[in-house]
Image (cartoon, rainbow, N blue to C red; front, top):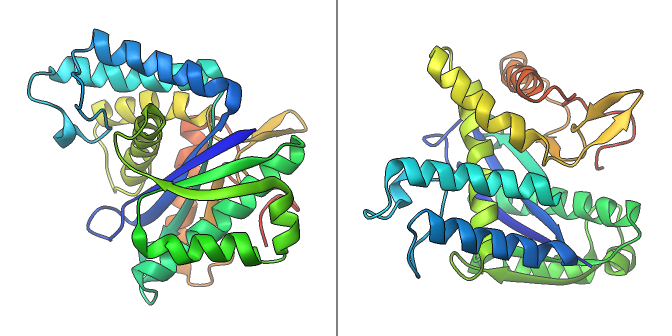
Length: 273
């Protein structure tokens, strides 16, 4: 059994060039390991009961030092790597999605992530559950995903693998903290990739964050090369005709490849419909 816990970030263009939605896939046997690891990290780094452990610096409790907060985030990502958790992410350039409502952008992202999760489950002959961060506007869409499926996946085929859709919330589990930190780190790297210039120190920070994060992105080996494009890294739309917009996607893709050492270009037949 697997659990896919999803959140979104960069909701508007003020936050960054790309709208991002994604999450972590946990096998049932990994959940207790992640829970225990984060319990220990919180205790050792000075987080008290009820404190939020998140990527965003503004969420740091006053009694936790900057150094301990940074170390906690690094240790969470390291634990995720060691335990073998996978990450699936979706990016949509705000300029391209400007004509869509926030609701429509969320639904598009959830559709793509659901199909990707279904494919991951199918490759491992497994079944699982899917949870999103609480968003009451999406309740109806979760019903649609279960009842009707998405794209070329009929309701029957999705139900073969995804048996439950639901919502969770911040601080309702340590899994939510893990998702927030992993997706927050990914957001940091995506936003840095879109800047015209980043200081040498900034580049080192991005490299230090994204290199371990890239190992979480679901990928496959093809002819000796690891591919995350079409698996753990999903860019939409798949075809961008406007050169200015396509260039922004290409810049992001090249930088993510340089950070991760993996190909972000989908292999034939790997991406969703």
